[in-house]
Amino acid sequence: MTTTTTAIAALAVLVLLALALSLKIITQYERGIVFRLGRLRPVYDPGLHLVVPFLERLVRVDTRVVTLTIPPQEVITEDNVPARVVVLFNVTDPVKAVMAVENYAIATSQIAQTTLRSVLGRVDLDTVLAHRSALNADLRDIIEKLTAPWGVDVSVVEIKDVEIPEQMQRAMARGAEAERERRAK
Image (cartoon, rainbow, N blue to C red; front, side, top):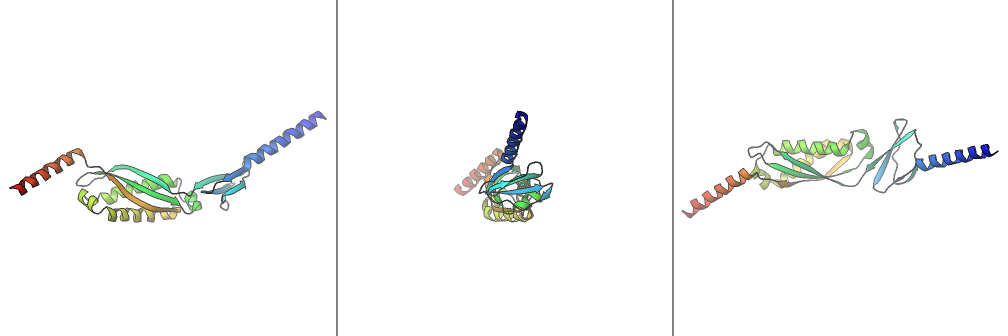
């Protein structure tokens, strides 16, 4: 009888452990994408949910706004000026974000980097400094168009920092000094 009691107790512990492992909490800022045997199930909203171990897999998608600082890119222009861009985005469709692209954050970063190189590669330093808002709008439109099929909404794209190389700073200083001397004469 003790063997039977021990077996029942062990079985009860296993059932409670399986139940504890299958309870998942989705926080308010997340959505849960569930795959049952590889097939997509309806999206889990915030709250307590039961996920069957070994049969279902839960992928959490953060729907908060993500701030992504794109590393400085060496833009090939007449000036060869590095620039940093900040991209703010959030996931609007978690199913598309999981199903359409492997990693939406990395993909958005790569799209932003290549777009930065292509858009700023067409202009020189004076245009970057004078028409920053128009360039920001162009960057945002292009990135938004490319990331919309992934369920990612790009809210802000901002050219944050333009680094002027030392040689260019010295050349600009010499040019400004020559201009001052010309005016003085």
